Amino acid sequence: MVSTSFRGIWQVAVLLLLSSLVAGCGINNIPRYDEQVKSAWAQVENQYQRRADLIPNLVETVKGFARQEQETLTAVVEARARATSIQVSVDDLDDPAKMQAFEQAQAQLTGALSRLMAVSERYPELKSNQNFLALQSQLEGTENRIAVARRDYISAVQQYNTEIRTFPGRIWHSLMYSDMPIRENFEATTENAEQAPQVQFE
Image (cartoon, rainbow, N blue to C red; front, side):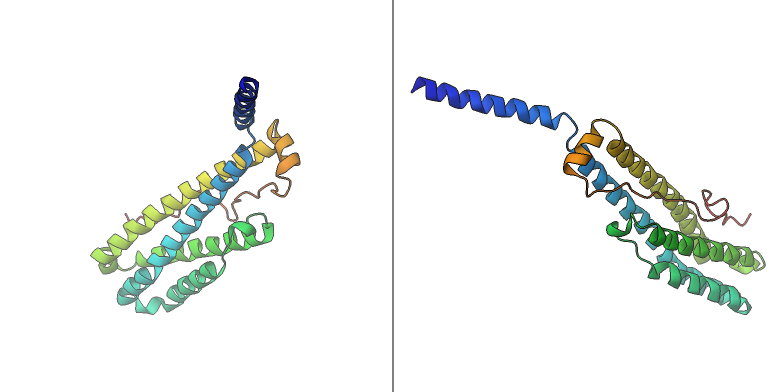
């Protein structure tokens, strides 16, 4: 009876020791880092959506003061439609073609917004309009948030990719997580894409 009880305690102790050794050896790092990548990508999409949500009000405000700039306004609306029509789910993060299409659509929208802001320079009443100034401030803040979200995503992908390429993560990857591939990273698709577009009017 005593030996059976002792054996049970010994088995529990060995099981606890093995569990702590496995938990401390990085076996959970790969799925943890993969989840960080997915979370970081969700933030990138969230910030791009925030920008897209600001654009209709911005276009309407500019239209009220600069109706003759219809070509520029139409270009912004069309670029927004293209950018919001391309959705990249977490399952698409490893598809370079989808990522490139997404990035190019966002870059086209950035360019169209920059042209719209340049046009507004010709309209002093527009530049002093409170609604326009508030939208300008929100757009500047959103562009900064996009830059931060992209940086965080790049960092998360780097951490994940490093884990599955180095020891001991490489071993765990080959044994348990071989279905989790190297992640594609966010690449700049336009010249000076790492800089937020200038929307100041001074």
